[in-house]
Length: 297
Image 1 (cartoon, rainbow, N blue to C red):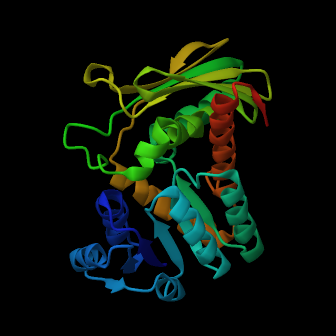
Image 2 (image 1 turned 90 degrees about the vertical axis):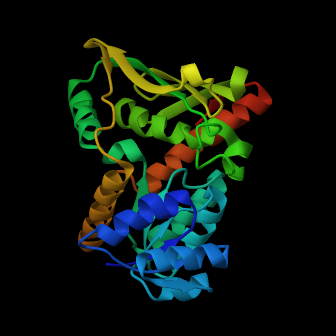
């Protein structure tokens, strides 16, 4: 499958580009970025073509892999889907439900495959945990903590303007929701409150009665940084296993799964419809904080 890479930042080069260049079923042929000099640098690194026109790159490939801010991603992914190109996208799908809906409509109309890369969902131990947890059932709730920081320790995301603007809710929140929703099911109501260190506290009511809680920040103190997700119910309290492979390996799995989805025209569990559901919860949490009310989905 011929891929075009849209984006030139750290994640685009170190994860997506690296995984695409090494994948036996992917042919990385070109890159486009908003900064032409950075695009050329990425092109030189991988021995591919730097495109000045994004639509020209879309026209030359079978699929696009996008590593751009969510609002930019949603617009370009919609254009690519409209052109009949398969989509390998980053999370979150977009920053508004309206943009997510436009993208979903384009994917459906043009019958293209899509995969949204929630890192943990492409880690074998996490997927095995989800399958077993769904089979076990009896969960009354879960707790997901994402204490991260994009500042200090030479973080490659320290200058990420969209992360600074929307914070942990939209950046690390999707990772937490990707696991919570897979086990506990459809969300029906969302309540959220802001806390210290630009932390967002979210409660999600699920269709079968379980309630999950999320604590999310990108400005955690150094001694607090960490990730943990715990489900509780009739089976006791069970922690989701940690990642066991690198982001490059996980992205390689996402590439394989997109290729298979495109080959068989089969919807993927982490396709744009699931990505839209995650955006719906995030937007509801944002609305809840602004209006001091619970948002019903």
